[in-house]
Image (cartoon, rainbow, N blue to C red; front, side, top):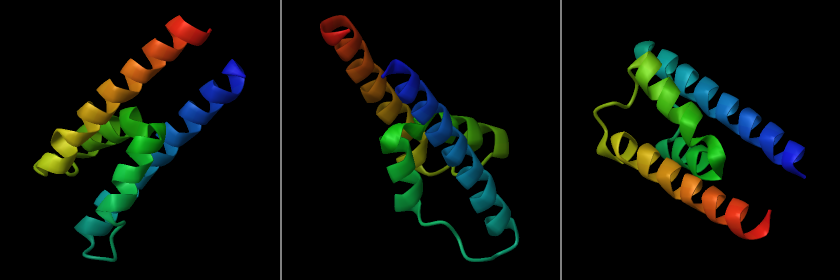
Length: 90
């Protein structure tokens, strides 16, 4: 079970990172963008680390409070849940 969770977290963070890159490239080229709610959903589904990495590496969405504070808040919540589950169920 733990292996599945680890693989899932790696994949969702990689996907979120790639989506941040793609959205940045589309922004530069003034093309159709990935909706912000999609990026936030990916973070909520476990991709907050990938989102933060993409945000900082590509300098993308860094001025948007929703992302600047939202991604770290989501990460803190996810880490709190993981800590709780690890200490109470595993």
